[in-house]
Image (cartoon, rainbow, N blue to C red; front, side):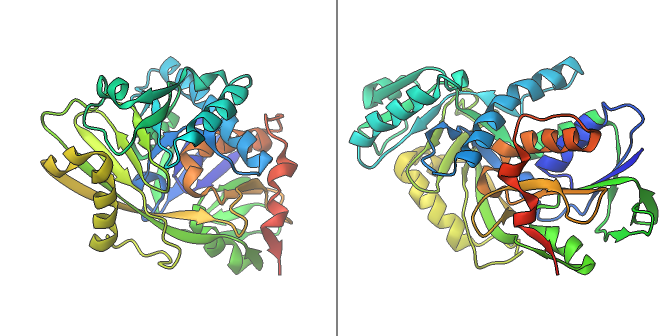
Amino acid sequence: MKIAVVGAGIVGATAAYYLSKEKDCQLTVFDHGQGQATKAAAGIISPWFSKRRNKAWYKMARLGADFYQELIADLQTDGWDSSFYKQTGVYLFKRDPSKLAELKDLASKRREESPLIGQLEILNQAQVAKRLPDLQGFDQLLYASGGARVEGANLTQTLLRASGCQVVKAKVSLQVLADGTCLIEGQTFDQVLLATGAWLPNLLQPLGYQVDVRPQKGQLRDYYFTDFATEALPVVMPEGELDIIPFKEGQISVGASHENDQGYDLTPDPQVLQGLEKEAQTYLPILAQAKQYRERVGTRAYTSDFSPFYGQVPGLTGVFAASGLGSSGLTTGPLIAKELVNLLVGRRGQLDIQDYSIEKYISKN
């Protein structure tokens, strides 16, 4: 069976990796290579403190965090490096310190079904200083040992290499033939998986579909130090949109912005980035001593109700899609990809697909 994956971000790359393990599967990945959210993503895997009321989303995020253990074990068994992921723990801030106990109680209850959360503690400044003495802007914070950080670009590159599949760098269109097969770049495919994130409308609108997906611009800045041991430091989640994510080799990532009025623009905006830096320095002043920095810009995909979806495109038997992952894409993306692969090969997955119904977001004109 010939299968095409369009888009090599977190969903496409994970799907390619697991499809490569299926028998009789001839796999080709197409990727335009510009604007991809995952390449510009440094993420925190710590969904257990969310107060979103969407139970289906939380289930996906919870199982998505768990799924990293399976993904990493699979890659390590195949002989691949998994340093893109590390459980270093997470520090959560609340402007109202009384909310920390409330959050700890919530996480304690959720730990029964998500033991990955690990140890939960409310720490004071003196306790935090033993591990990260430069952190400030709090009296107390909540620590969870199971929190992890992920480097999106490293993850997708590893998955694509591990899949061993051909990656064609091209901006493609999709043509559905009379026999139900699909034509992409002069090649016919029995099944196609569309994992193009915010660009999904560009592929399906020419086929007469309405697609409830919009772009959101995200910018972050990586800071580099020559004499600051960062690899084992916890990730930091102040209240709001800002995250501070230490990586190995003296790198700390700060971001990311959530800009709804910039379309697909990928231009770094110094004003936005300086705003992120200024806020981050209130918690970690040592950022001002970084030897160098670089910016990354990507485009996230959102639906009108902020929920992700996946499944078979209505009316197209061999075409499957996923989108709308938003800023939790690194948490939910690998699991969604595995669920799509299960769907393609006829296996039962972990999730109830009706909870993430594609028909709600994609319809024929």
